[in-house]
Amino acid sequence: MEAQVDLNSIYAPSEDVVARDVHGEFIIIPMTSGIGDSDDAIFSLNEFGRAIWDKLDGKTSLKEVARALALQFEGDTTEIENDVLGLAEELLKRKMIIKA
Image (cartoon, rainbow, N blue to C red; front, top):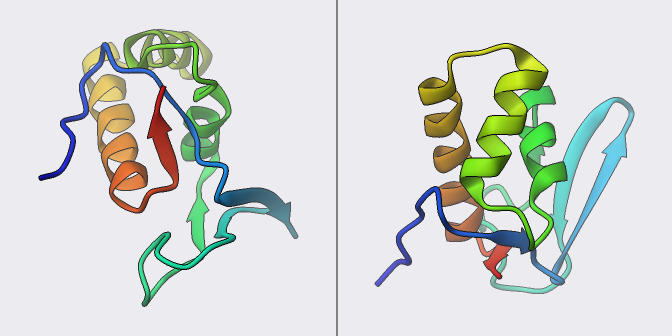
């Protein structure tokens, strides 16, 4: 059973991944087997995805992340909350983040 991601949850990057900026592309690389997806183990993020990743510090709820990003990107809060939830779900499914 997969964990349910919600805006009150707090996440942090897994210790089993490394995130790097390589030639202008931000990528997350699994360091152990079983992380990521076998067809696409290296996961890249766009500018907005990276902004989300940078705020997953193990102390900040997804709601607070979305609120900060709404100010930074001047976007619709509901849409940004949905984007944050969607990325968090994908990263959690790939075991690239953990619930704090």
